[in-house]
Length: 322
Image 1: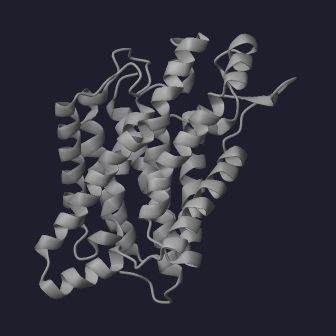
Image 2: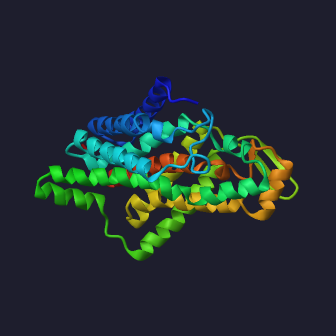
Image 3: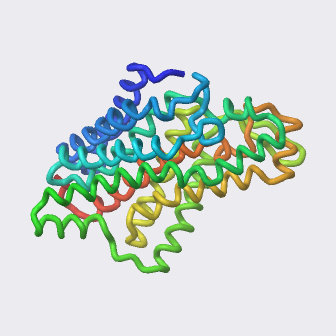
């Protein structure tokens, strides 16, 4: 699947439409405009400009590190694009860049998701038990790889502080950083993983089939359903840990990679892998969360985590944030 203008318009328009609905959560129209601008900057700088560096050789292939290795030079360029998207979004969203600019880099990754294949396509070319073991062994750690680009985008946001006066800079730091206690961080990680695991299992649904050993298996969820499930699950987790434990959105964002690791290890257990390989086609997965590629989880998980954080911060204040 190629990256066409149609995909750019649909992804950009879809993300923008979601954030235009923020008025339902007492979000000022100017903040919504800044959020949409940040999303569109990421769509263009990361999604469109960075596409040639991550495009799979197979037009229908999935973006992952199994068959499409990204060399250090390409990673450096992608990090530069993510950094530029965060910085540009921060400047465009002046003087409230910290409230919307972190959305830019994940929005770019979302474009790549809809321009490439899914887990089903990946397993079609890696159908044996040995090949699947290799696939899951790589996917376990891949979430941390894509988080590098999200982190580069956040560094661009941090660089935006250089454009502020000293007083404004200190105020922004206080908004972006929270004094977190170790216990609160630990419990936030546990809550995030539990909430996401539970909600994705409910929200990312397809046809279910009974299995004598596994109980049931589920059809591969579509990319739109995965986007909805991952974003809403991490939004709920981000809101919960911010509201109840006063932690930063950084915690649920990092948990994206932890969820990916657990899901891939979960589905790669010998008994599960043998049963799935022998008796079920690649259109079925052990559980719906096991059919989510790392880049899909990172893109929409990071968007959801930051949005949940902002919802929690916004609902704790009576006036609208402008």
